Structure formats: C-alpha cells, structure tokens
Length: 114
Length: 115
View 1 (cartoon, rainbow over the protein chains, first blue to last red):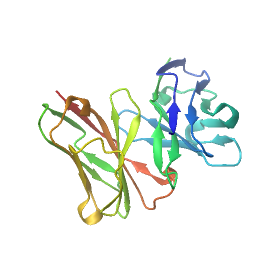
View 2: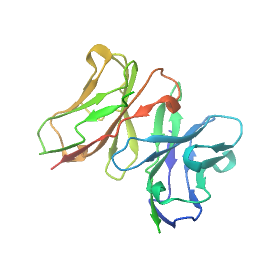
View 3: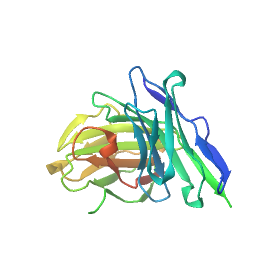
C-alpha cells in the first residue's frame, strides 16, 4: 500500500536560514508527488508537484523539491525562510487509477524564529 | 471567484450526538472529495463524488458516516452518532475534472471536537 512518511513533526529555523523538510514515500509505480502548505484558518495550498521529467521542481513562494527515486524521497527546500512561511507542510503521493487519491504524510509544523 | 467553503468552521458536540458538515465546492466543479485528519495523524481520504454520484467511498470509516451530494452541488457529511475518535479536521476539495490533484481546490476545513 502507498504511504508517505514525514519524519519531523516540528522544525524550528531562524528567519533567513535555509530549510529542508523531509518526505519519504512508498509506492509501486512512478509516483505523482505533491507538497502542500496549510496556514491557520486556510485550506491546503499546493506548493509544487512532480509527475515526471526534471527531478528538481520549482514551486510557489520560492520553494523547490527534489525527487530521488533511489532514496524514495521528495524533500522540500527553501534557501531563505521568511516569518510568513510558518505553517504546516504536507507531503502527498497521488494514488488510484488517475493518481487522484491523495495519500498524505502526517505533516511537519514549521516554526520560524526571528 | 469564491473558493471552496465549509461550514461550520468549528463544531463541538457531545458523544452520541449528530453533526452535519457542509462543503460548497467551486461552482461548476463536478468532482468533490472529502478527507479528514484525526488528531496528529495523516490526512486520509474519505470519499469522492462525481456530480451527485459516489465514485469512491472506500475511505468511509463505518456506517456512522453518511455523505450526500443532492443535485451535484454542495455536499454534506453527517456523523451519527458521533464518537470520540471522530474528532479531527474534515476537509473537502473540488475540481472540474477527475485528473491531477494539482487542479484541486481545498476548503479551510471543519474542526470537529467530540466530547
């Protein structure tokens, strides 16, 4: 069965520092991979996605992620974190016939200290 | 254009009571999905509507949960009777086609607390 693991429940970084959020997945075929962010009171917002091709994908808000098949990983990165990035981040894999049944990780809460 | 809306934003009920959650998708979106996040756990799929039909309800936990989408517009998710383990955040999402989740729009969620 498909699964997604986000090993870090909480991460705290200083404003301006770099960020990496880890995500490992288990999926039999080529995965469709996603990162979402949820700020308080808001819905889940798609940051970026990977379907195929270039393994380094760029997203919104300056985020990027790298797909590494050999490590079954899809880690999210940002070179310089802003206070407004404080939120909860979810990694997900698209399962099902159309890749449209999302299997999420448990989420990582990002705290940004000034 | 209005996004996906969910009502109420919060609900606190006693064990054994009934609660109905509502999701209004973006107008014209045939596909509607329900997900929930039980406290501290992963967000999990509940079911998928295409218009008023249940395309996939494999994630519904038990028969205390009833989802409807009469007329193919808004959807309701009723929990009757509610149990403590039903506490969590219930999300819905909508899309125009059944393809990639990159074209989904999520609502802000309803936080359900069962005491």
